[in-house]
Image 1 (spheres, one colour):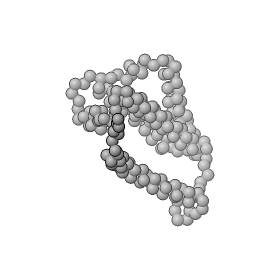
Image 2 (spheres, rainbow, N blue to C red):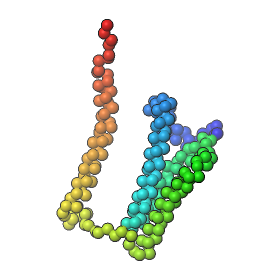
Image 3 (cartoon, rainbow, N blue to C red):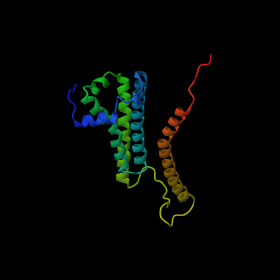
Image 4 (cartoon, rainbow, N blue to C red):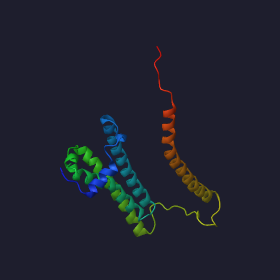
Length: 188
């Protein structure tokens, strides 16, 4: 294990803040780390799905971006573990042959399907599935679909602002309510 961590490691430790009470006790920390791993895995699979679907529709840049983004959590995990003396490859070798095969089929199969769809687009000049073009931008775009798109964008922005406000105000309101709540008193 590395005894002296460099500036990058110290920055990562400050970002992670593993001594924070937000990680809870040992049981809560264990569950949180498993949940984070589940979330990371699901996010990586979602990136792979975006790569496949966008390649089928004829995109050439978005699939590449999605595949690269899919790798970021793994690369970060490998970096973090290696710097702290944990051999992730050795841990991965402990999995069963079936688990390894399933991982290879999903990841490399998805990447191969993505590359095949991109090759089709490059050779045919259009994606496997050709979407109808709908004019949704500009002042000349009128009708139901452009209105729905604009409304969705405005509604999403408003919802994001309200969510941010709730994240800022919510903890303060809960803290005030907790401070104002009468304490339970045992009456005998």
